[in-house]
Amino acid sequence: MNESKPFSTLEWIGDIDGYLKILDQTQLPGKLVYIDCQDEHQVWHAIKSLQVRGAPAIGIAAAYGVCLGLKALASPTEDSLFDRLEAVTAYLASSRPTAVNLFWALERMKRHAAACRGIMSHQQIRQALLEEARAIHEEDRAICRGIGDWGSTLLSDGMGILTHCNAGALATSELGTALAAIYTAVASGKRLSVFAAETRPLWQGARLTTWELSMHGIPVTLICDNMAAQVMREGKVQAVIVGADRIAANGDTANKIGTYGLAVLAKAHRIPFYVAAPSSTFDLSLPHGGLIPIEQRAAEEVTCPFGLPIAPKGVAAYNPAFDVTPAELITAIIYERGIISPVNEGTVRAAIEPLHRRKEAISSGEKPNPHR
Ligand code: MRU
Image (cartoon, rainbow, N blue to C red; front, top):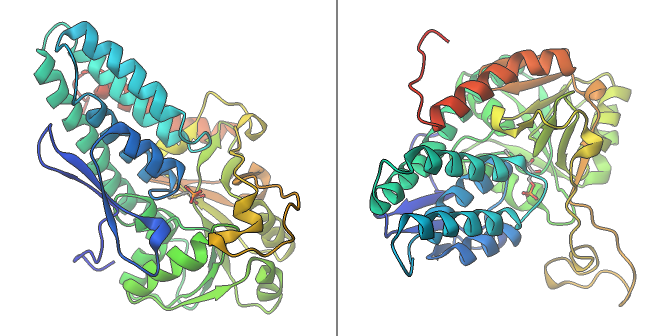
């Protein structure tokens, strides 16, 4: 990917009294509009309405949202700060239910605050929390690069790659997850034909993935969601690669609605199906994907997308925002430290548990052990 970024998905402006600048993705591809979030309510609304979206970006936005929520405290005592922290994190956690990165980031902020309690002043804790949010943001850049490096090893020159929704720079701090593999492969000289599925009902594939790939000079072909089988049968696709919102301990993966169908089609056509996600997207507390909460969204998103009525007034519509792809349909999961394959509880836990333990220890204030 071009190092001079053509856009910034989210950015903290200023010091502890600063604000969060978010690229409003509901306006893309027509308008490049940024919104300045000055309080936690604006961040909650930005997440809920998909102005900021994609699992890692939601987590980063929520972490900064905590900093905003601690700005205007009536009494600057330690107790009031921690009461407010509880309230703000619970509030931000209510914005969207499926992407575990949201809850992961909020827990990390709370753990870090707890480690500072009793040894720092109120202002110092706020400063430490801003630094923690910045660390979550910065680490995500490195994670995207790691996923890009590992993911690109699975993509060969001349391949056709199908992706769904948007798991790119718009969904993360920078390179993305699924798209990071594509950006990295292309940067290393591989020629890929990328197909983006439009991703009804909110068209993240059509509006966002085609936009960001084009911004980075990568040719992309848009297909309607219902064309995937035909494109596979025509031999145009040699790999499917998607992101994830939550991965259970056995590898079952929640991602944008339509992902499961693509995995079934990929199996029928003997095409590898790859998931790319950071370790923060794994929820090892859930034994299987049936336990992942699936966000249900308004019927109007289906019947009247972006204000255009496409169905008779009053018709019922069902609108789950995500589905779960069973682990047995996933050829491999790419994460920042490697590739998990085959995908099952043993391989997932072996790869992810040590990483989770290490990150939890660091955010609780323990010094990192360079030998682990
Ligand atoms: O509803 P969205 O647009 O937030 O859904 C996003 C996805 O499903 C992405 O594929 C996922 O969050 C991974 S982003 C790196």
